[in-house]
Image (cartoon, rainbow over all chains, first blue to last red; front, side):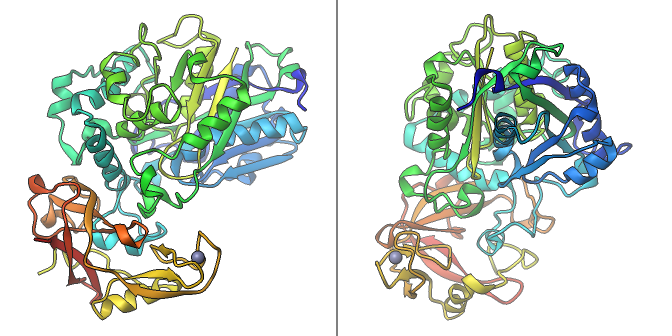
Length: 390
Length: 140
Ligand SMILES: [Zn+2]
């Protein structure tokens, strides 16, 4: 049993500038990632040398051995990488950090993600190394939008969801981004007409339903509540964190489309949702604000249902009623602009925004926010989530 | 003439899916059929997820495919796909084979006429690497 003083909390957040894909030709990915860690440590009021744990998630190329060497960490006692694709494991990495802190395996853990895609292959392009490619590439299924679109198509068909309803996710995110100086799309307001006029990428996903591709890095510092007493920031408690996948999902929509037929058009988040609420001892109605992984807007609709903010098939109405809008909606989401409009740092930037909401420092601050849900990517297992609290 | 350009990668059989592609080369669409519990599974994998048996046979699919979902791709993500745009990707369901789904394309239906639930029939097309792959047409 974790004693209250052992409880893990976020005490520092740090990020580099976020830029468009390929925007950091002048700095290496490792340099950016180290810079984000250094900023997060400074924000916490901790010396970099006190970091003794490093956690990230699948696809991260910044191996802890390089990070330790570059940052000159005197000891690295804990290092882990959550399996899975892209940002499904963002909150899973937070789970690893929490577990390390609460078990005593490490004292100060940095959770990070660095992306310099101009120096790597492009996510939105065909990747020959993807598992199961024999059943994808010969049929023109090359990229995440191709893979996710049929899921959204079936979902919208089954429940009569209208494009104007799905548009709310992109529009709300863009509106929030206009208040956020970090947001890459912050100076480009968007109207419903702009959204509907944007080109189709893979039906029913339009350009503005797909997240950006960005370069940048961000990190959070996790330590115990006891340790946090000596530090400069108000601690943000990680009340719970969970990762997992429903039975039979395999590689899900990004691989085979052979998840259980009755779960097609859902996001594979119901089990993680149950775990994360149970872990924190709260329910969906207690959540004040949420940062929901928005690689594709259609999956945000499924997340709203998976996490119990509305019933199955009801996300369209929930959106049409303005429920996700800052500041007066029932559940403002993606208050930084999210992946669609702030930047796509694989969910890590959503964790930072969740911490800001609990600190009370968001540029779209939800008044008296006490509980923030943050989720990892859906549809490519295992997914993950965390609940942050004051 | 194939639905997608010859430069698009064809299947390269490896271990678990060799039997599937071998049957395709004989113009037979087959699914793994567990000989212990009778469960069908796809794409190919070594263990039955229902009963954990490693034993299976290849059983040929009936002509019952239906369009379970689809997308019409307008933005190409492979350098050779341009001439095919816009093209569809179909998720084809086989209800009496434990709902296994095949990812493929419907070659004879215009994007605006694709309908979830529409009946489909198999046809075979050759990829640039010489391999036959299953594709679909409207079933009357
Ligand atoms: Zn079996």
